[in-house]
Image 1 (cartoon, rainbow, N blue to C red):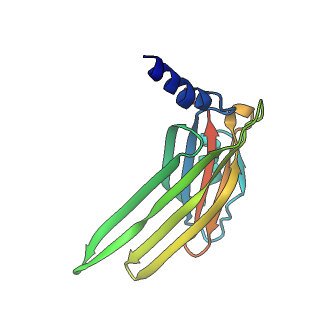
Image 2: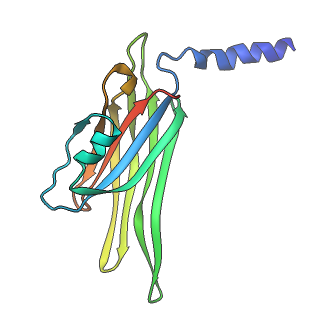
Amino acid sequence: MYKFFLCFLIVLVPSLSVAGGARNVNFAAFQKVDKNFEFDVLVEGKFSDFIVAMKGSQILALAHTADAIDGDIITMQTSVLRDEAGNLGDYGLDCQLSFKDESVANNTSYLLGGLCKIIQVGRGKNLRETLIIPHINIPDTSQGFEGWFMLDEDEKSGIAFYANVSLPH
């Protein structure tokens, strides 16, 4: 029993003392439908304000990952596969993002970055892009700022990726 308790103290207690703690990571992808629409780097407001600000685009994916901690890998995949006269068509996104918690004392700091593959094959298109998203500081809504930060935009496909973090409920 003593060995079990000692292992608990060594392994689990340090993870409980992380300054920022677990967070929900919110991640969204939008694609332009209006050629004159421009994505903003920062969209202030609650989720409903964010959706309204994206009126020149369509939502491709929305993910809410509960209780993420430092070092977690967040994945999101959405795809439409279609047989087109014996050929396979594929339209979709495939993202793997690493979540970093660099919080100290009373100052939270979260980073998100990784890879997003954009695939638009079929219906006369043959686009395969890999977007490397460097780790970017994302807003923590628990610190009094409601908003979404653009991680990156792929201009060829007109797709932009946004994120923020919030406290678990």
